[in-house]
Image: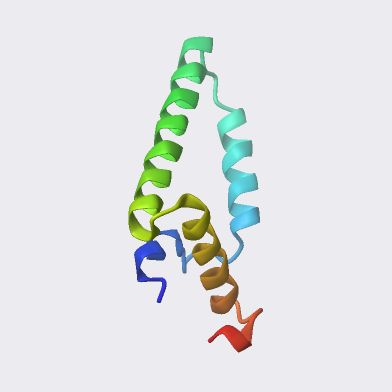
Length: 84
């Protein structure tokens, strides 16, 4: 039913693409040292790995989990009404 991936639903953000574009733009404007940039990348890589672990635990495989997430997202946006 998609409850396990509900942490990927951001109801207060109308456009994920616009939000991400603004976020990256803001991040790029920060005055950071090379070490700070590397620490941010390291932290992001850790977060990605942890997300994969959570999704894998929820569904048994990262591919299955990502497919489930994609289908649930399409259902919410009513792009695939026949899946409801």
